[in-house]
Image (cartoon, rainbow, N blue to C red; front, side, top):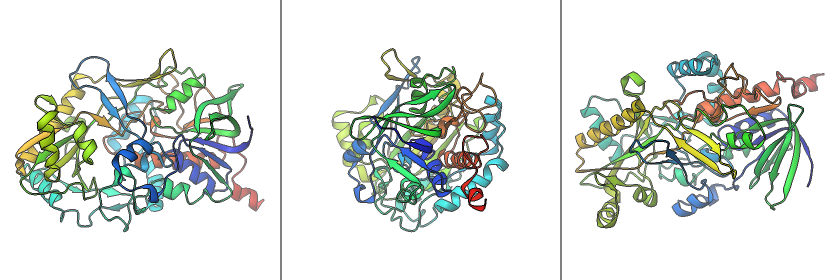
Length: 485
């Protein structure tokens, strides 16, 4: 056993933890960043699909239906490496709408409006160089094909915004890590800009067991280090940012008892719909999400969004293919795989109402349950029907689809004004334990209808600012004030 001390320990290095750690280190704070996965860089990102799934991703987890809505389990996908899911996502950067923040207020009383978040969105967008992905987006055959279908139905398909730079070659390998560092993960930005300096200590392959708590205050962390030994380390404040699936587990193992921990999990269920065309489309050689349609994003308009164009690499594409008879196998699956270059995919994301959950069973094993209500199932079905119409209008001769999956889990430790309905306060500090903060997508009181990473980063920047200013009394005066004094 060893014992060290830092000002802040951050658990998890994704869109939340990576930003909190990087921001605090840049401000001169002493930070220890613990990551359960390994540390991989552009040299490791070679579009080797099976290796990426093994090395960079969490082993696939599933949210099983509480009832039997006929949808099957939801596959839960996340990054397990330095940078977390920002290493393997499509870098889409969208702000939450006022409509969605109104949902947050209704759910937990948290009083965040766009005017509160916009300054932090601005900071993140400048730091990552967020830009519109309009570079040749409609010159790719697959994008032109999809656009034709949307226009035929009177729907709008427009370029998306993303945290990628001019080094992007649109090679399509985002889900296996960016080989050119064009994709601005927290690994190659917030973390790498600080980890060789004196303020940020990075420890990959470090699995946190629990937060240490004394007299109602977080005092440190117990974790299993890269060598397999138990380690303890102490800090003035602890930020748990393991993501919506892992953060509630860490809190539960640490002895917290707030009944909202692990509840109100939003899945933002996604489903691919694929159309087969006569000519090669090469949807695997383009930025996986170059455009989107939000005509139906509001609940009253349908409650779903569609992103285009996309197709998984061959393994991911084939393992979840379905047709009217259910999951495909045998010769029909072989035939679909042989036509890989001719498929165009649309990705539907349906609004949900946060009825899923994370818990631990009697043996301490994680349990994920989905509990879609009839209105949520209606949204999922409406999204698939719309995408089917788009692809047929574009000229598709066959339609296939995938099972449900998600990378946008949110809300299992949500923030709010009242401990009866939330886990942390509006400044992200636990209602139960002082000096203990949550800094990831778990905070969201309700699921966003857009990709959540930019909002996670904005809230993480806000949390870092709060901690550095010493507003909670956990840290000494900001470094710049100490220097002036």
